[in-house]
Image (cartoon, rainbow, N blue to C red):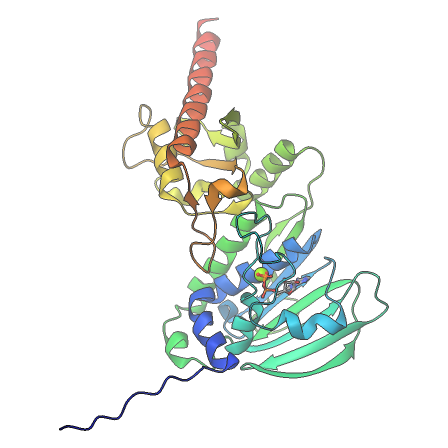
Amino acid sequence: KISRSLPQIRQLDEAAANRIAAGEVVERPASAVKELMENALDAGARRIDIAVADGGKTLIRVTDDGHGIPAGELGLALSRHATSKIDGTNLLDIRSFGFRGEALPSIGSVARLTLTSRAEGSAEAAELRVTSGEMGPVTPAALPVGTVVEVRDLFHTTPARLKFLRTDRSEMQAVSETVRRLSLAAPFTAITLRDVTGGGEGRVTFQARRETGALPEARLARLRTLLGAGFAENALPIDAERDGLRLTGYAALPTYSRGSSVQQFLFVNGRPVQDKVLTGALRAAYSDFLSRDRYPAAALFLDIAPERVDVNVHPAKSEVRFREPGIARGLIVSALMHALAGAGHRAATTVST
Ligand code: ADP
Ligand code: MG
């Protein structure tokens, strides 16, 4: 009889569990920036400043003027599965960007993270540092109401992941893409991205002012900041509703199409998403006007009752599953075809007069 040693089942400690989760939540600096920016938006920030050095590998700092975190809750904010955004009883009704309570502890487990915050109504700020998952004490700090999250040396505890990062330049590009995309979800928030490589004030690489007025106009103004006047001048406003789904935003004339999908911005309940149902519908709507190698430019916002779409598909939360994908697709195709037909009609009348 051969004797084998039985493997023993052990409970992983929190630091190890966080590091494993970090593998899915923070793939690269851009994903950390996304999580921190979403937290700032969830906190109601009207202004967000993002500073990044060396493509985010050595430094990411996100400063917001949101509602802040009370000193007594800083430790919780850095603990796994602790969140102020849901109470756990209704996972089908998620209205915030965050809900998993994973981002801060995950980032803290693979970097040196400093969380400084002053909560609304609080006279003082406080600070908590976490290095490779080890939490320090809460100390007093100076800060106006809001939060600063500073992340240094991302992935220094996970060399394998570090090795897979691209050049500083491509990581910075991914950061910039993430900031720009998410900025479209928040036209009433001023957003600045600075490259502070080498120290000092750094160089502003993206800046969007706080828009005012009604949402459609604010979105168009933000799109103008993002894509230049060309998109805005060629954009058709979209506003359609069917079966309780509402589609708003802007779709550009076919003549303004691109050679890639860089100018396609799709949102579900305010969240930037990558979704085949939506991109497929967008393509289908333009199929009479565009060849296969051209991509329509559009920023579309689909609003749907939270229980009809599942956002809890992947830790990065950029995928969704529709309960009735056909309805979403149908709405997009018909709304866009209608807008394009109207534009064609107008163009034809202009020519004939
Ligand atoms: P989640 O966003 O899923 O709740 P996080 O780990 O990203 O999880 O954040 C944990 C908690 O820390 C949040 O629920 C929130 O209460 C608090 N928090 C994080 N960032 C901020 C911020 N910038 N402003 C205010 N509170 C924050
Ligand atoms: Mg979060």
